[in-house]
Image (tube, rainbow, N blue to C red):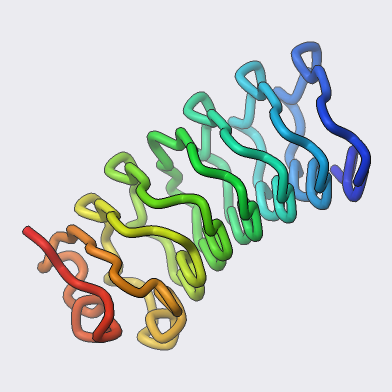
Length: 191
């Protein structure tokens, strides 16, 4: 659904009357809306959405976003969902739980204004690829204690935290043993 894809001059939009309850593909809906400063998607029903990738990609003027109401139960991918949202400093994404979710590549990549994220509500037991997930972001603290990376190949870990210098992460060392072994030296695991 490339509804507003690349609407570069769009600064705000009222999507409160959008009925997304039957939509299976919400990818790229706001991708490239580089002037968009805010958007209220609290009425979005995403329970049937299989594709949520690149939804807000390159929304470089967006400063805060609340998607705590999103239902990820049918989603296969959230790849690059917030990629290059360079001014996004506040993101409420409380829980991501989906038995079909496989791809989380570059989700927060280049989110330079994000310094912390609460991802304790994430269920990643079915995810197989997290390549570049946090790369080149401004993150300094990250709670990944709910993460399970047992199905992820070690190839994903080589770019997961690229250039995240000074990042402190909290992880479950049993469920993320493969991740802990592959962390770059500039990422610190904290208790």
